[in-house]
Structure formats: structure tokens, C-alpha cells
Image (tube, rainbow, N blue to C red; front, side, top):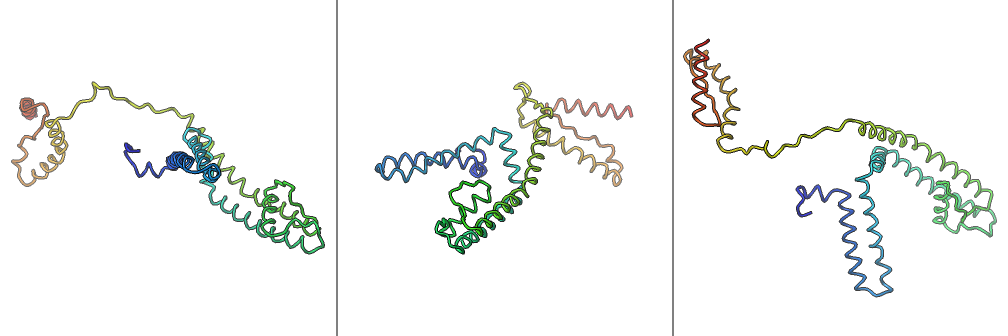
Length: 256
């Protein structure tokens, strides 16, 4: 972390945050284990569970998990609507089954409060059916039947959209894996040439040569004698080659 080239970006990465929390929780658990007695240690064992979050680092090496995360991100709106309608149905059916079991004479009523009905509604809408809470009256059973049907319809509606997004990302990942990998050219040490001050100056002046030539052509219209001027060529190897280049340009002008 101390040698990271971009520390803010490193700290904002979710995987690095999980790794940092898991590492800190280890030392907190170790320190509290030494400080507290045996009865109070059970309350701080939660910090040891946080280290399980390091399993999320597997997403960096698993293509399937990356596709799944991208699918959830693309289907965030559909998942939000699903959670909203499920919560709404849970609250409604919990209240209905609570009052439905109290309407008739039912000495074996298990729904003593609406929070108990919330647990039953969650189990019924998700079509799990543990069987620990069962309505006994006819009205309660009717509410239970409607709750089960509503759960099937509510959960089944956004599933095709999520599956479609997963298929799209999966096919895209398969297509990218079949593409030929680009070869990156690695420079050999002998190909690396240090840039000295003379060569740097020559490169800068040569880059300004087109601009000088354009200014030279603009001056020809005002001063015809400026066309006879010899263009300046900068050679990074020294003044001798500069003279040779100037003489060669003069010979070329004579041939013209």
C-alpha cells in the first residue's frame, strides 16, 4: 500500500477494502481475546467471521463470477423492483394471515403477532415451506394459497430479463476468449538509446521545421529574395554533418 502509484484508487477498490477489513479484524480479535475473559469472548467472535469476506477476492480470477457480477449490475433496476414487490407482498399477507386466524375460533392459533406472520409470509412467498407455521382456519388457508401464487408470479416475472443479461455477458466473454491475443513488442536493452541534450535539442528544432517552412513560403510573396535562402537543418551528430547537409542542399539547388 505504501508503494502504490495511485493510493486513492487503491483504497477505493472493493477487493482491497475487504482485504484491509479482514486483516484489521484479525488483530482486533487477537487483542480482545487476550484482554477479555472466557465468558466475554463469545461476543467478539464476530470479528473472526469477517475474515470469510476474503473469499470475494476469487472474483479477480474467476470469469464466471465476473460475469455474474456484471449481470447483477446490469439488472439492478429489475432486482430493485423484485425486492420492492416482494417486501410489499410480505407485509400485506402477514397482516392478512394474522387477522384471518383470529376471525374464527382457533385455540391452536400460532400467529400470535404480525412479526410472526412476516416470517411465515417470507417462507411462503419464496416457496420454501418449512412447516413450522401452518394456518388452521379456512380464511387463513385461503390467504396462504394466494400468498404462494403471488410469490411464484412475483419472482418469475423479472427472471427472464436477468437470464437474458447473463446470456449476453456470457456470449460476449466467450467471443473475447476466442479472439487472437495481441502480441506486445518488448524492447531489448540494445534498442534503448538514451536521449542526451544535443539530440533533444535537435529533435525539438527539427519538429519546428515544418512551421519554419510555412513561414518561409509566406515571406516569399513579400520578399522575392527570401526564396534564395537556404533552409536550416539541425543534425544531432554535430556541426560537421550540418555543413555536409548544407552543401548537399546547395548541390541539389544547382541541379534544379
